[in-house]
Length: 182
Ligand SMILES: C[S@@+](CC[C@H](N)C(=O)[O-])C[C@H]1O[C@@H](n2cnc3c(N)ncnc32)[C@H](O)[C@@H]1O
Image 1: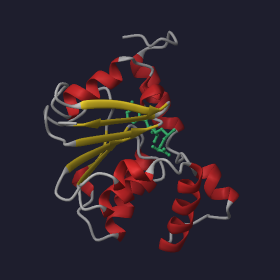
Image 2: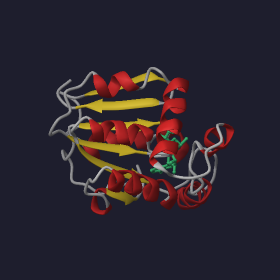
Image 3: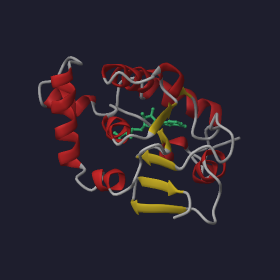
């Protein structure tokens, strides 16, 4: 398969995995003097990240997530994943690069949550869960990097029961959220 940029899908995936191994958000972290992963440094990072994207939190806080199965795709520095987890959901994470996966596992471990099995390296184009597994899928600033229009379809069909009755929302240019039964 060839992406719209004329590069093979496997080459695009390989480049994405290498590029994003340095966590998305590393520039922000450096700019505010963060060079470690202590709880305090992560808190400071999360505060700065949420100040940059103030509209994000309500997509999580407005939902009743306790006990719900959630999947986040494209994890970056892990700020949103930690928020989704803190809302009592059964959080799962997926990213094509090892760095973000390792960071999210680290964050979950700090929170005393089951980590390794729930956060996996893998692609949005081939979600490694059966159809209908998740109640909510969150993906911020990720799907356009896959180079494939099919990414949004895969989120709907592979991640959760496809629409209807679910709802696929693109409330912001790079925010995609799927809610089953919405
Ligand atoms: C721009 S960053 C956004 C990270 C985070 N959601 C945020 O808002 O800061 C894109 C993320 O998507 C991941 N990614 C890129 N292509 C992917 C794919 N095909 N499948 C899963 N994750 C992918 C990257 O590794 C990276 O962590």
